[in-house]
Image 1 (cartoon, helix red, strand yellow):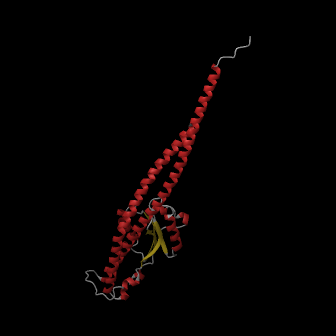
Image 2: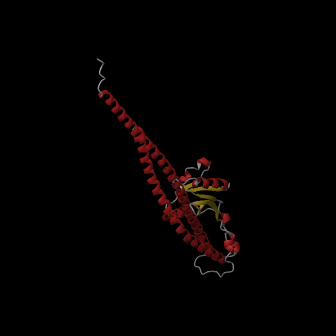
Image 3: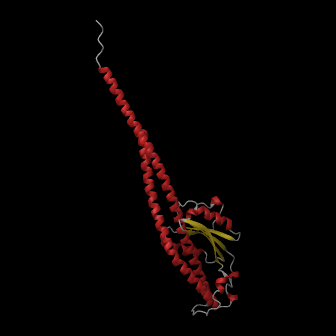
Length: 287
């Protein structure tokens, strides 16, 4: 009986855990869909900014584009966009492994996502700064602005992030954002210079800042979708594992219950036989 009570308690605990995982699974699926829906708009915005940079590059001689960068102290950053929360499988580890392999001697490491930051010592990495990652689509822009503010004086910025793939999968991506691709600055060479009210150099600097911001938002949104896709897969695997354990515990519970019933029936039968034997009349002695 004591074992049966223990089995029932484990079944109840696992059922409650399965309910919790189901809720997390539904939340992750919803966030994947939200992030996917936002990606198209972000990509279009990034394309518009690229076009504006190409057009603004026509406003000054090619030799002047990017001039003055050498006056800045060379500061490069490798920014790794990790997860803020756990239950995402190997998501953070794969990103940190790529970051460790790619980190150049002249670069500082920066981590976005405190769950990933909690693993840096294991990989013998020392980030210059750590910022929290957004856990929902609506917070990505604010996080991107905070990260961009830390990169204002950077002469080189590379991003390590998760590229979302259908089916809850992802691939670790690496993207160079700053310095800007020279081909982008030459793309508008045949176009007429656009109307403008800012000094051409200042205009181009502002557009490059916006380009960095757009790339940060895009990378973070892809990472957010990938993170929740990975979490969705983890929740599915956990649900299957719990289901198998519940089936096993239910079978054991039924066996224990059947054994208890059988034991009770045997006790009843044995008791009945004893009573019948004790109540039967004694055999008369021969005369």
